[in-house]
Image (cartoon, rainbow, N blue to C red; front, side, top):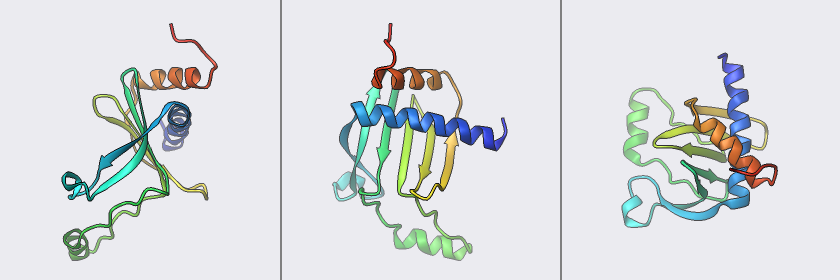
Length: 137
């Protein structure tokens, strides 16, 4: 599959995931970063758990934790810059993360990861159900 085709497929799956979380999702507090266990590093994601899938959606209104000094220092030592997240992100999990995609309002998209599998059909089917376009038997 070409990179262009892979991105096109990921965008279709992103839109399906968005349909599900927007219609059936609940806000869920999740721990992020090194402070996740203390409660100080929490952020809310719109999440849905359906069938064998867990879908989580981050919008620009959730404050991401800043990189700690040690991470910035290590990156600088190697002449690297830390990844800047785009404002929107959708993750889909089965037993592992199978889709991770970020985007902004200007049309920029970063496909972080896509692991094809049977989950894709399940996601599309659930999105059609959530949109009222199909009945799951």
